[in-house]
Length: 75
Image (cartoon, rainbow, N blue to C red; front, side, top):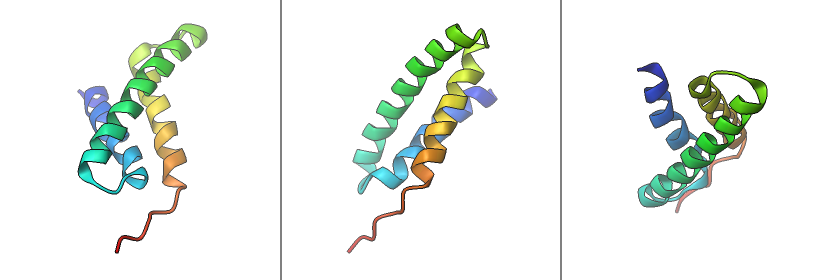
């Protein structure tokens, strides 16, 4: 349950600094989620780790990187 929650929350949090509208945030979150899944599965194969937690770790790394981006001022 925790992994499913993380896969729902982390990509949307990572998309927030990159978007201006909720629609754009949803689109970017989908791309981040898909990319995290692909990269996480590949990393799990190479590192011989469980797939679910590895996918969440990749998403968390993306979240940390996008958290360094300053938010845009609107208006």
